Image 1 (tube, helix red, strand yellow):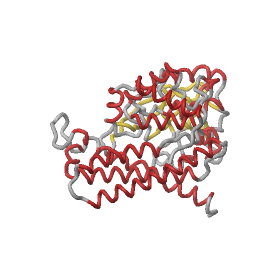
Image 2 (cartoon, rainbow, N blue to C red; image 1 turned 180 degrees about the horizontal axis):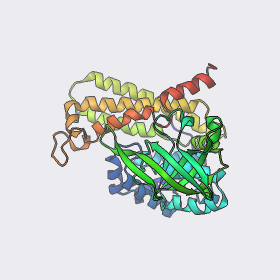
Image 3 (cartoon, rainbow, N blue to C red; image 1 turned 60 degrees about the horizontal axis):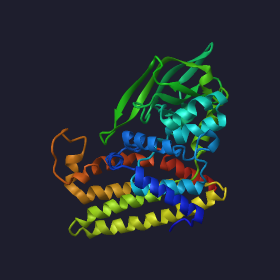
Image 4 (tube, helix red, strand yellow; image 1 turned 120 degrees about the vertical axis):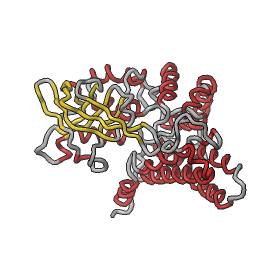
Length: 391
């Protein structure tokens, strides 16, 4: 099922396809295809952002007044879907999609003028300082503190699971600025340069063998008070807004359709194994259902309505289907996945099995986290239970 498009939207889709045909190079596609991490290959993403920024398309969901495209939700959906089908990398979202809307709404004019152009050009690379050891889903229990010292905050503590902190030169960070009030009321939202003295980054290597996440330590880090976004102690409201922005425009079903097509190519070479092929058909049907839900949701958003609990249901379905596909890929290549397991692989050694299967093992292991990050499955179920079932 496809979204019904107007003549103007069909013309826009043709523009997107033309750009992809002319500017999406085989090198960018190949770099993206080899990645098994949640945000994809960093070099490919940066190269693609450079292409889009020259066209004025890097701020996909940004208002025109801030240098963005000013596209409608349907245009964003078309763009994202066409990019997925063509094999384009995802743009790194931490600045462009996560922090930028916060700066639009809560940033000062000086912050908007300084930070936003550098996000579009990728001169600034951002990471997110939310989770801490012991403070994940219960984020309000965070302990990293910022104490006022004249015109500076002095920050001490640690953040964990910090995606791409080893690439980032800036971090947006939740810190505790008041210890005496209820947890949500004493949090502030700070912008911090990663080269500030006292910041150190330690890698965390995942089960997949990827270096994607990190632990960041703050040891008496001095941050100018002008780097606060929103009022002091009101950062919880800012943080929640960050998680609400960019409702819609998603094309998860399109990505899963690409994944199931890759699985079917693998299964074509598998002799027999009817149960595997039957399960692939069942997943394909579920993806069609998700695609219809996505289309219905997009129509709702285009009418100016909020997604509601439907977005939580779609998040659960999408992450679960991604895990099912990666599991079937592993089962389809069977023992041949072992030589490509980065935990077992002797680096630079030739391995048996087909070259295009080399990311399946790492992809499977990385996909285990998809039901946790971006809103854990259990949290999404609680949202559905509360808002739909009234429990």
